[in-house]
Length: 270
Image (cartoon, one colour):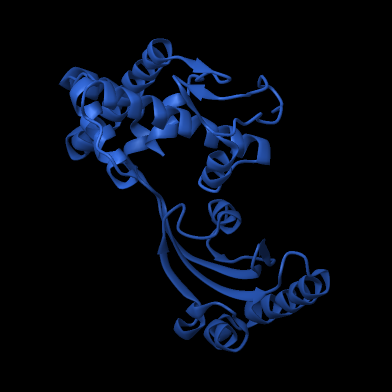
């Protein structure tokens, strides 16, 4: 089996060859896995892919040691699940822990601010400078007209918008954070109610936006979110336990050409 010399990654040691116990992780396997690990650079994506395969192989070999391994690629995940159910010890958070966590992170368990939004999308690709310039100038013209005749918003949406919402007069309804394209989502959080005075850019073009109403978020009492709090703490505890477990397996089984970093558990839980 071919061994891989992973390219030098800024801030990381060179990783080659990679062996887990007596098993080599080859270049083809890492290349196939890389597509599942988007990152800012190709080097980081390959590093994440190699890490995921190392974690999986450590767990597969440990399952084999305990007689939990089942032949066949489709059964490996079942073997790993059985292994973790047997060996991973995750403490259950106490009621006091949950209440302290809620008090310290109340914003995580709040109802989000909601915005009632209408928009008109003037489509233009990010790399089409002419279309974006034309779209922006059209947007300015339409905003001027809407400032004088707000009741024409539905008409303009039906005539000019490239968004399916044009059939509803540009209505997007009530939006919580994260429910629209990120660049528009960020801009919406800072808008005053009413028609915004200039077109807003996104990867899809220009948006003419009317913020018709805002409902501010509110903190929720502990009793209303107790299960969410408990789940968050349990997930944190699982990550910590899994990280320690993997590092112990690294020492026991042996790992060459690679070191599991402190985020090793993330490879499994993605």
